[in-house]
Amino acid sequence: MYLLLLLLWFIFNGRVTLEVALFGIVICGWLYWFICKYMGYSFQREKVLVKNIPLYLKYAFVLLWEIFKANVDVIKIIFSPKKAEIQPALVRFHTDLKSEASLVALANSITLTPGTVTVRQEGEDYLVLCLNKAHAADIPDWSLTRLLRKMEGPEWN
Image 1 (cartoon, one colour):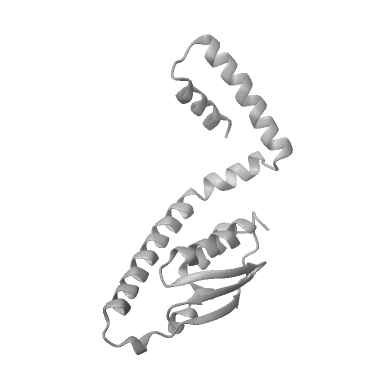
Image 2 (cartoon, rainbow, N blue to C red):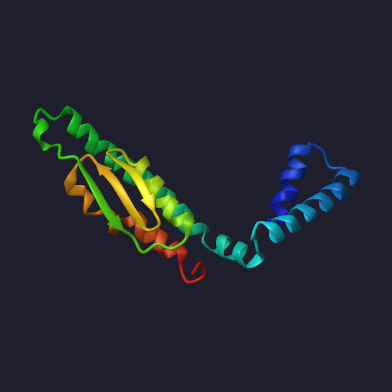
């Protein structure tokens, strides 16, 4: 994190001189100390985040794939002559995710996917509006939910 802050300092400053470098080292050091002391950040957490970068990238690609598949499904419904196939439903489900970041990421991923909207999320309980009731049963064991579970791992509990 410190090196990232320092890199941003040099990029935003636009030049590298001895004065800019020394001032940047001091300012970034103070900012890193502040983040660690008052915002709950730690070097151990940073190591976990760096270790999980491949999982974050995989999550992004899987989310994009799920959005693509859902777009195709919604387009099929829109252009289908049989409008009776649409069975919207409000679905409640519980997940075993524990970290706030994972819970929010799941809620946002559901809403980003066409045909579903997270209406409410309280703790591990979700209320989701689905365009097609048949797909609603898949959400608790969705590939994104499994990836979030993997990303939480034992380090977050």
